[in-house]
Image 1 (cartoon, rainbow, N blue to C red):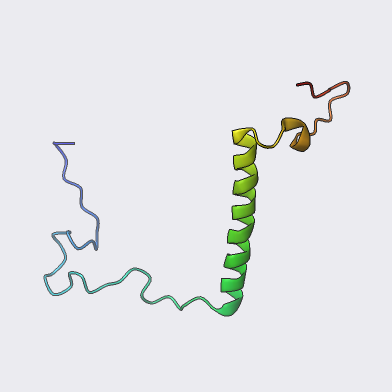
Image 2 (tube, helix red, strand yellow):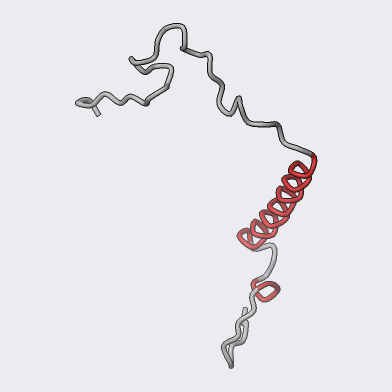
Length: 81
């Protein structure tokens, strides 16, 4: 947009920041590093997401047939090919 100048408070390009403050702050620099429990949870979560993604990709590509994964509770429904 040509008619607007956008500024974010505290950003390095902000005109309100003094020259000695620019680039001295790191994102999340004050936060503690992840502990072992969090890392295990994260790795387990990523593994589950990877498994789900592969299953969904098989469905999308037609490798896994609809009748193998789709279940309908409506009476009288049959999967036909």
